[in-house]
Length: 98
Image 1 (cartoon, rainbow, N blue to C red):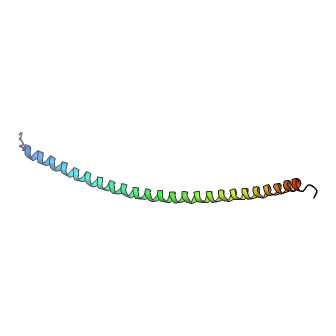
Image 2 (image 1 turned 180 degrees about the vertical axis):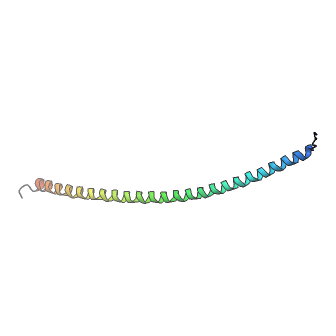
Image 3 (image 1 turned 120 degrees about the horizontal axis):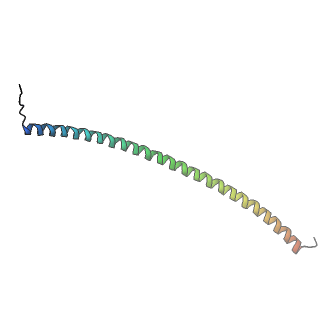
């Protein structure tokens, strides 16, 4: 008993098209979810970059302040020593008898 099954080609194509549409909708939903996750990660990365930039700026300011302090200290000591030596040489040159 062999039975023949008649299927309309149009019905088969309509079913295939419906499945393709369903898969397209699923793909679109997944793409939207991924895009929203990527946007959230981008915002977190931007926030972290801002924090790192502010910390770097604070460190640069601290280093510059320390360097300025050391430079001023060195120049101050150098100035005092130079002034003392020039005073001593001036006394010897201009007032050799005193």
